[in-house]
Length: 118
Image 1 (cartoon, helix red, strand yellow):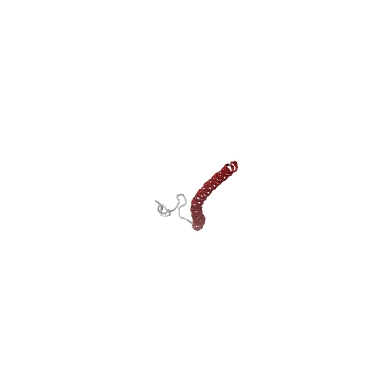
Image 2 (cartoon, helix red, strand yellow):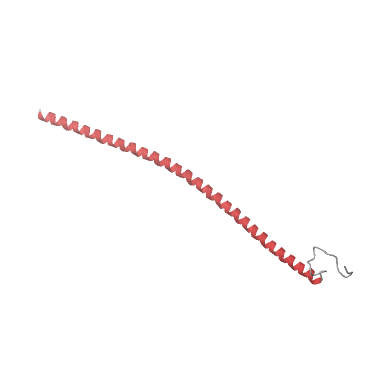
């Protein structure tokens, strides 16, 4: 080994020897470029996290609305069944009243015909 050669340094790229002032500047440029890429990536990740949180909030709202709608649907079903039963019995009562009315009219007509013949 000659005295003017530098010892091997694994952190210095091979073929360059001792880095000069330009190498230091190039290193800073690469570091700055890498830092800019890292900052961009961090910003993108923050935006993704924020969007995910917003989406989670919207999903919670949709789930809450779905639960309310399901509850209202069950109440509607119960109410409609009660109404159906009430109207059914109203119809049955009306049918009974009509039949009883017809029977009373038939009895009256029968009595009138019976007493008129005598």
